[in-house]
Length: 128
Image (cartoon, rainbow, N blue to C red; front, side):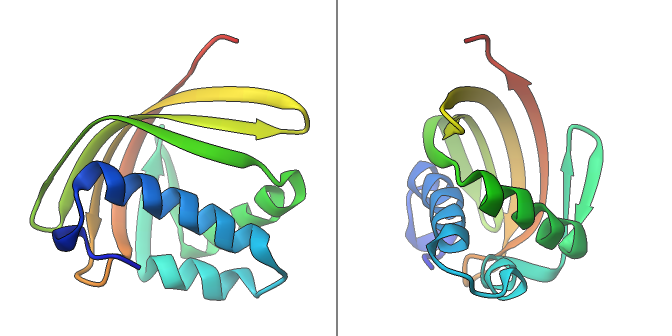
């Protein structure tokens, strides 16, 4: 995994989510191992007011594996300062023959080795 300090912020955030999803779908590796590869043990994400810790993140991998989405991240703006990354992007996903697009405002902190420590996300589903 790339370091935030060694990678352009837009490329870093796009690669982070794309690689995480690809690793989850690649095989039957224990999802906890994959979550831990990309997140710290004390990770906390707040997505639209919903608090997601490591255990909830691992539980979320089950529907991801079941639905097997293909994703693409279109980054509109991204800036980093030390371990903090702020980005505005659109998540494009295709699952079960349906196309989805979600606008995301992301504010997160990452470790020196590129793992997510915390994040706040505000999302808005776009009309088809």
